[in-house]
Image (cartoon, rainbow, N blue to C red; front, side):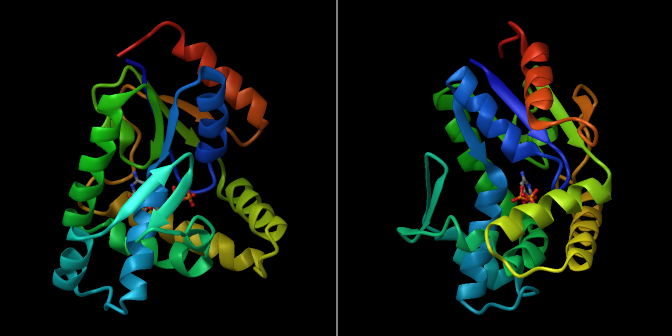
Length: 217
Ligand code: CDP
């Protein structure tokens, strides 16, 4: 089966290129970041203190999430838009750093990977979730380029955002994700690194597809 792992920091282009590659290769796409975003939405909805690991663990243990064709359901409600909110982006790294939250989400991700060919994007896919994959990619780009992309994306959605705040949020999140104890954001030794700063989406897609070749897992 084909398992493609795409990792990298915020705004490196992971989800955009993963979606296109999934369509082109006719395989499933799983946005693992969206899963951690749903966990964060649940914790915020329940008004749980983000330092209260015990309560977060209890709530995430019983969480009801579903993913279907890139539509995300929390307690049977479509939260696909809500989970992209700035307030979720600001708090998600803290929730995603909790060991139990990660174990629970990784179990679901691995289960999905056993069922069909998949391209998954996140922070720990090549190093942890799909460690055995032979098709690992690490996307990166300068912080300016990544923040600009995220800014454009949010402005196009009609959000009222300030570019400086986005740069600050992304830099903070990258630092937190890279320095956490459980499955930090790091390039897997056997991942191909691609700097997407000077490349357009199509170029990144073509580059990845050309490297996948016939290598199946
Ligand atoms: O879209 P963006 O790159 O901004 O973020 P995302 O992929 O939606 O991920 C949101 C957050 O979830 C990240 O900043 C990480 O804290 C966490 N995450 C993670 O810990 N492990 C993953 N496999 C995916 C996301």
